[in-house]
Length: 123
Image 1 (tube, one colour):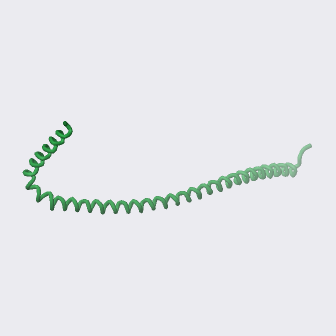
Image 2 (cartoon, helix red, strand yellow; image 1 turned 60 degrees about the vertical axis):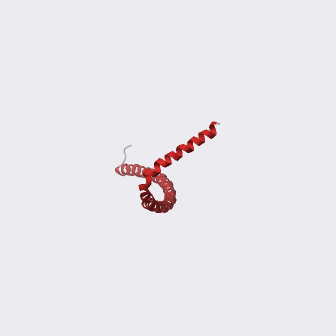
Image 3 (cartoon, rainbow, N blue to C red; image 1 turned 90 degrees about the horizontal axis):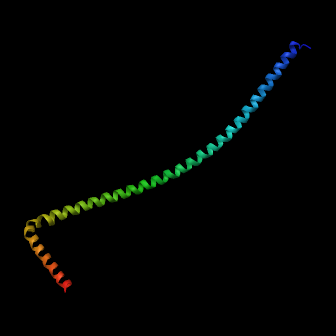
């Protein structure tokens, strides 16, 4: 039994409609899965952003502490430099002219002290 033109067109339209509906159903299912994965990824990104904010606060706090430590170290180094300059300019340089006399005397006293110590421990 031959089909009429109307029946053939109706059959083709039915197949096209079924194919389109199947395609749309698969597309919507895939979109739903993609949306669920997107929500999970967004939740992870929010969690990471929160951790990054906390880490940023910790880093800023440590940098402030480091700045204070650096300032204190700079002040201590400056004070130490001033003290060493004072010692060298006021004490060491003026007494350096007496050094040729003091060193042999100090060596002699040190040797005598060592000999006394040997005598005490030797007996």
